[in-house]
Image (cartoon, rainbow, N blue to C red; front, side, top):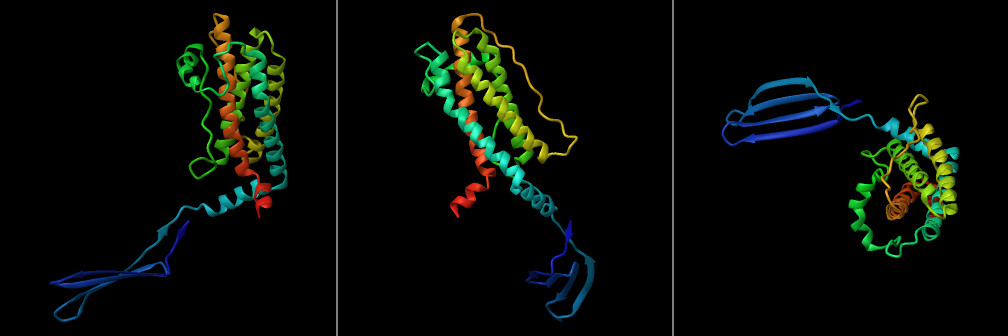
Length: 246
């Protein structure tokens, strides 16, 4: 979109020869110069002058209307309930299937297992940030869906080798339900023809029982961190927070 400035005055001055004045008025630039000695105007000319601005107004208004819509908000709040349920179930799930005492869910020692995560083949979760000009609503929802599907695939791969997998199975079901809700939001935010994130599969290298335990442990640790980021992103989209705070 091109917008003209109503009035802009530009002044430059030379000690010897005089100076020049330019102004922009109603989209037209007028420029003249004068001589210090005589005060006479040497040149006057006018050219069209416009300021380019990015046409963000309409798309932003449309996006805000989408987020604030009743259907979108209902799904956001349903998604928040599901991710909170997932986060609350992670400690019990971890305790039920991890029997190696050195593998603790919230331990500073987990950072030392990064190399083993790479050896086993556990991919990193997608980055999640708040919606902004550089991180759009679509990008946030796509990363959310892909990250949840990644962790569901990891749990599906490792769970058959766990002695106790009941709680892992329940956690997988909750993640699946949340992916369905996030994809509904994504479909509303994108064009109908947009490609939805597809289910993924992962191949882990698990030669022994210890590797299985570490894989399950690191998956739950990473899911917990990703889930906390998901909570923050969904909270930023939930307009009921603003109503309760006002």
